[in-house]
Image 1 (cartoon, helix red, strand yellow):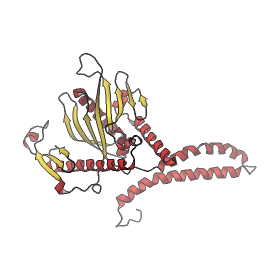
Image 2: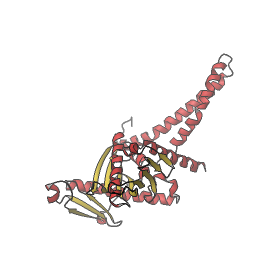
Image 3: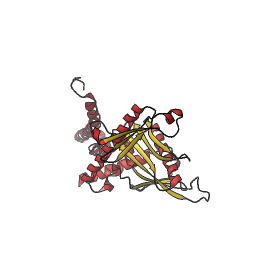
Image 4: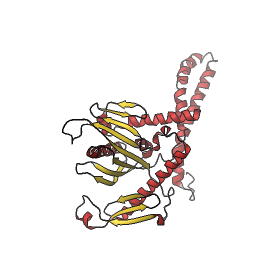
Length: 331
């Protein structure tokens, strides 16, 4: 990079440098501590320095296990998609109108989380209900390590509360599904023009006269898989770009899932693999608690979590996944 080779792919080199630097830093820190311990042990043989060495040596040795663990984590196999932007898709499950309202709550939770981390959060497609819930929403999230942080959110989210539509005050259980997909790059997915059908149509919903009179919405159907993507912004050209990007991302995710399944049949060890049929979390409003069933973690701060305070949960899921990888490597 410093040589400024005109033929070099600077972006690729920069990503490689960014991936390697934390590992090198951990190795240097570990080697530095080993050198300090070796020097302190040598000082024990020097009558003038022995007392100082006896004071320093236990402190240096106490720091060794933590550095060893940090180095082990740094050397774990990386998911190449971790640094990528992501697409979040949220849909209501069982529960009717209440499930759609809960899907809207999840959308706002992720919006606030993204805002807190300085990420951009753009809604690509949204289909709302009359009560203010969500029938379906697709959002594009860009920032630092977006997929690495959000990939553990894929799955079924369950809510237990008294719905606003319930006059009897009974607690209902509803659900919504979340899918987090790493954004595909052009080199990841090649789509044959003969494999897609592109239709234009009038957008529906809010938007005034423009929406009702212009055939700007774009629907792309991927014939081999049956995947259908719709984008309904004002610009037809922009809609084509958005729909193609979403389609590529979904096809890329299908390929990732196929590879994951081929590598391992133990889906439970792949917390971030996105098994969207798995119930991963329960939000219990009467008790003010959130339970993540994958790691048996319960937090009694539901209000803060729904306001986007997700770091404690995501950190715990990340640590659990790292521990599983280290155990597998140890075997």
